[in-house]
Length: 156
Image 1 (spheres, rainbow, N blue to C red):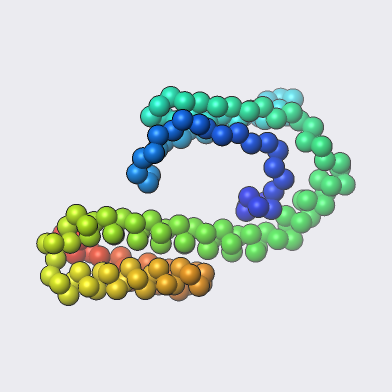
Image 2 (image 1 turned 45 degrees about the vertical axis):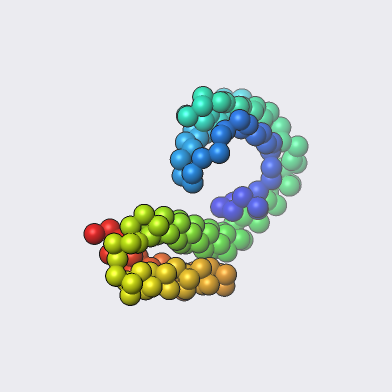
């Protein structure tokens, strides 16, 4: 399924020892490989530190054929809703990233703006944050557009 919560966990592992760093800075390379026997190999490596971890998951996931068929039908029945939820999550992530980047730019370059421009950007940030609480995709997208427009002066 498109949303992880609707899937069956096959296994998990942690990538330990990654130092705290600013948002977007860590670069984690994740590799998924399924061999001819249906065995899944997953590895993750932090490019900055070289720390690595991996897991191997055997072909038998403990599901009967009936359970697999039920899960496939469930995925088909929920495909549209899963897609809607995924699109909302993508809009929310884009909005959150824009708020973060705009705040950072405001901190660095806000003193070069006129007071009214700075207030307009801060109001657009606040409006977007309020809209994020409601969870309406169209409203979030509209506020993202409004903040993008309001913050254009920061890029000049």
